[in-house]
Length: 103
Image (cartoon, rainbow, N blue to C red; front, side, top):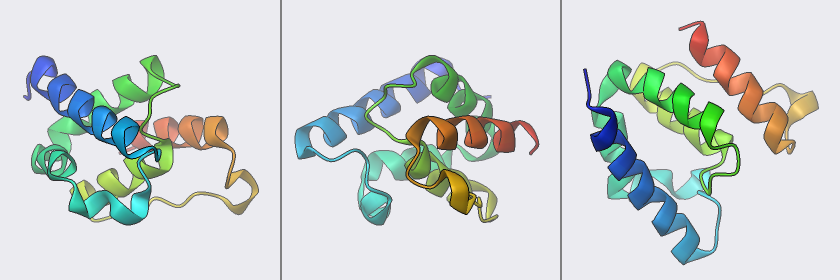
């Protein structure tokens, strides 16, 4: 199991990067950020921590769609965002939490 404080430190680094770059973790760039690769490297053990982050930090600089790309990299499975909620940040966040709980 990954220590929560280790996960939190990596997420804090990613959030700082997002804030510094003035973009909200655009998924097109997620593979270029070393901190994201650290989360991917944590494997399936990161999933409960990602769920916790999504639940407790809905206003994070890291948007749910970017977390979906991280989860895809961890699991190898495509996370489908239904057409009717695309662009709706809160609904995507809830959808992702529900999807992750079913893994």
